Length: 457
Ligand code: UD1
Ligand code: CA
Image 1 (cartoon, rainbow, N blue to C red):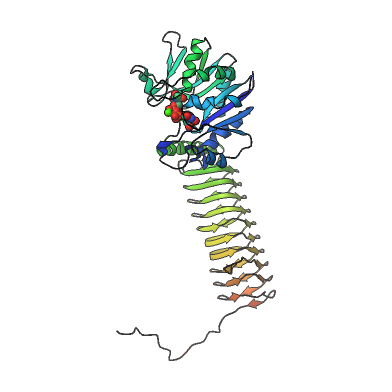
Image 2 (cartoon, rainbow, N blue to C red; image 1 turned 60 degrees about the vertical axis):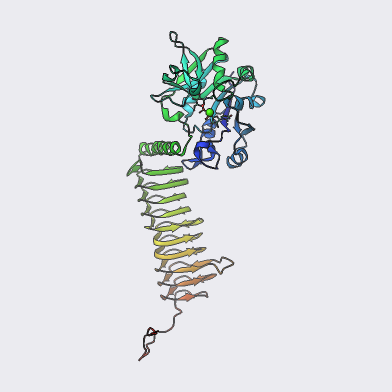
């Protein structure tokens, strides 16, 4: 029996999150909790993945992508055993089922593979863990002599003696579908919480002589669940530390592995350096020798070899070429492509623009909906006026243009090759190539002019 089904339980309300958002949609490392479990489930290549939803089910379903998922609604949350009952019609014959949880996001595929490998047709396998503080968890009760698992007892139903047991139920288990079909309908809810406990099937297995095997999770963080914002924050740090360690192991130099946040995927070449408090979202690719200085936010960005991002820069949906210098305090918005050796300096905003190699906008400018050629110098305070209040228009700046400071380019407009624009100009018409164009009142002086005086009341 090699077929594997996976069930992910995700119907609970998560009251302790104190939020109107269903618990499994809260984000860990930028993705919903449930997405983490689903990704791990997929890594095991199961025949099918069933997700049990209930509280906020419609929203959960809309928020999580995947045609490969079988959604099962548990209208009332009457316990983990009741949740599993709802999956029976969807489970395959001649398969075993791995049960996972939408709020236990850090479980590793490797650990699960070890657990699955234990389970032959006539076996059940439990993932357990030991902890000095087992409160809240179900306890694993073993025969004192043989050490064979006898039952799982929930905290609320446990005797004082059982509460001292430090081996706990992670909730993650593998059971053959034949057994699930036989045992789940026999569950009763005569317990402290009046719930149908999935954990009660273990005692059923034992009474029928079905061996219950167990694997102890090596790493407690893998089995930690999220019940509160506090626990979510704790897992976030654990998760981030793991990502940081992975980067360090790949040779990325992090100024401080506890001060980096990756909310997506960060792919780095060799000799990449990242200073403190940078946030990477979506897909970010940093080429060889790229340096990202402190306090930068990069979302869906690729940066080619040798480029430097100076402090406090915010860059989204942008491609940056080789040997560029960006920031400090640069804002680069979606749809931007910078070729090689481009400089974007402080308080420069670029949106939906292509800037060719060697061009510079070093201070206080807005470049929007523009196509900029090679070796262009955009002076301080240059604004592309791309919006007339209703529509957006394009600005074309050809190669070797020099734009003097404090210039407005009223789009649509073209600044032709080799043009020089005098400082303080408002350009509304296409400029001729290789000429100086300026639109400025000639400097005059008025003799005898008086400054206005404050009127006395
Ligand atoms: C459960 C286990 C406990 C274990 C602990 C590990 C049972 C009876 N107890 O307890 O032994 O130590 O997990 O964290 O299984 N859910 C549903 N439908 C329901 C009830 C729960 O989908 O009707 C889902 C929840 O969304 C959650 C998971 O099942 O993801 C666990 O439910 P929860 O009520 O948190 O179980 P615990 O009391 O923590
Ligand atoms: Ca409970």
